[in-house]
Length: 499
Figure 1 (cartoon, one colour):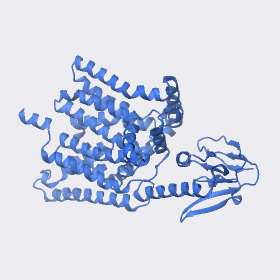
Figure 2 (spheres, rainbow, N blue to C red):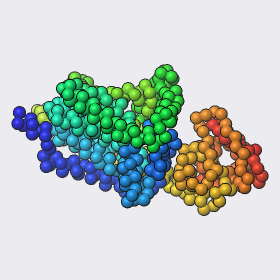
Figure 3 (tube, rainbow, N blue to C red):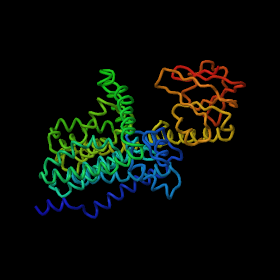
Figure 4 (cartoon, one colour):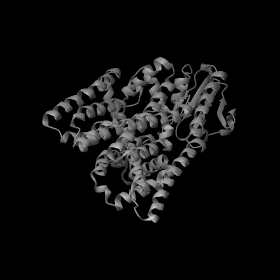
């Protein structure tokens, strides 16, 4: 019993050093690649929220991420750069996530499994990518892992005294990413089921207080409960359920959701995909899926998988809620196959198979590093750097060549960037790619130019011969139309026309 308690209460000094080294490795591999510009539409929403938090104005988008914005705002007191502050949050939580996954693997299995699982997560291509941009998905990974680790201690190591800590972490995670409250609720409730009625009541009250601690300020900053609920309802029911859910879209929506979910998992794993598939087959073939640890993992991640399958998964970053579990499976499989683990005793052929698994893991991590650093894709270092460069060049081009009142800016993906980086340019119009109803607008007096900033919009132009192509830098261009009198502009999903 004494040894059991010792395993429960603390790690060795070596374990703590390993966790710190893994976190440091995450920081060192992210810091040099940090972006200089806000990466996406949602990144700009977070930056606007740092100026004035109001969910009804999508600053940030619903349901609101108070703690995430608040932590970035705290960093901004020293950095005075919204993007740098938001990226620093991503880098910090990337390191914390890797260290936390080591702790979970160390607790559930052994030190080697924890190290391999952490390296597997560290070598994920999209996990690396989101660790250098201004989005909140790194916090999704950390709080998912931290909650799972504490739940494992409570359920399988008898650490009932950690139930209050679990509830606190669960609620804080909800303040960073409210979707975690839904995803991790089954795990939290299973832990409560092992508690006494007094402990259940205490933790329920604590959870309610923890929820109110961030929810009340979000509602207050957003103009009151009715306004907040109205914008959240419109967002969830119109933008999510109506467009993407299986309840509304039927089989077609299911196919799209499964396709997106599968592709996002592949984007994260890339060269580790074969290892993951081998690990999953081995788990089933050996019957290990019936073991309590893997049943626990199922309770952890099935709610997320169900939501993404039947409701919506809108971004590759969402899989970080369950990707650590896949890395844990890869770590377990590699540890089982390792020759020194005694898994292949007395059989040279099987020892060679174990060596191949170990070699395959090293090769997969090396290939993933190559893909992220050298291949030009949207979520690799080169793709992120190219996006950074293009945004900076286009914003600088507009500022250097046009007065605010003489140009109309048409954009889709970079619309929020024009609002943030070009606040004096009042005539910035969003070409709504989701609506087939075109918008009409009379060009204000004094406007001399119409600029199309995004690469996917020129194909919508009705008379392309009237537009001039302006090369800003090699491979980067905008389209410009010079107007000599008052015109009316029509813009929408099907066409752009100035008449």
